[in-house]
Length: 338
Image 1: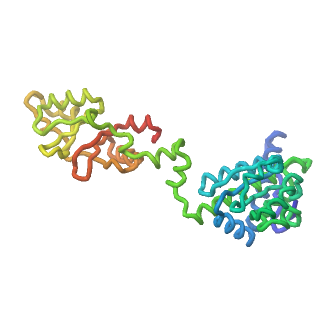
Image 2: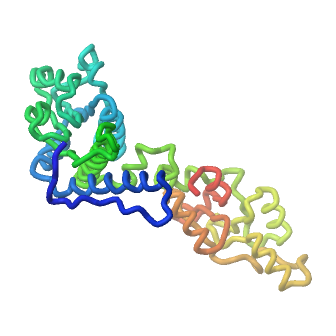
Image 3: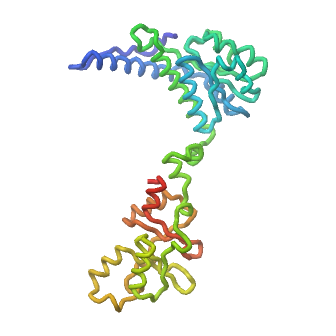
């Protein structure tokens, strides 16, 4: 552990009416808040060097740590991997019994140990030096064995643990986790990592669906595309809407270009404005030109268009204005885009 006298100690001030349990929880949070706040003042050229090594890495960032530090190391590896820095976790004990074969000279090792003296981690030092793999350490002691033998050292030291015995890793693991996040975000920004890049590694999540699915992936097409020609009796348009069940139909000219749409909402307006529907054609009551969207746009853009215009379906057209598909709000709901 290191003492950072530049950061004032946060005293636990019990709130009025606090139970002993709430007072304990408040003290823990205040200590861990202090531990994280102190990290910013200790960032130096070693942090830059760690980033440079990882940006130049031709292989993977191999993250390792023992015990509680190992759990934090696993999370850091997962965060790096999902933000554009290929990474995986290796257990240091297993590394000494064969798993070191996973590490190559083109990798970078990020080793976590609060004391910097964890035997299973320091045992890897001569092996890493022999194969020439760069080492970044994250410890609470800059003068430790692990820190001194690293190519870059990240100081994650804390003044004290939140544990009243000052024994259980609490503030120290929180600080290491926060410093790992800082490292991942710095690398993310340096790589110009985008939201779409993030989605590519999260295809099963809601963000992935919003950023990867396009209108063409979800639209109804072929025989499922509701369509009637100009001049059709209104009855034919209503039958087409009912047959396809999408709440609207496209209205096309002789060149199969979209001229307008007729929707459930248009039907309500027609009933309100006309006494005799038998003499009407779809041309008389359709909406021109009708909302439309391109198949290559993101499905999330279709959601926005529907919400902005208070509609539940869209015609999908090609560059020449020919309808090639139809998209309903229910399709977007089923896909998980919304």
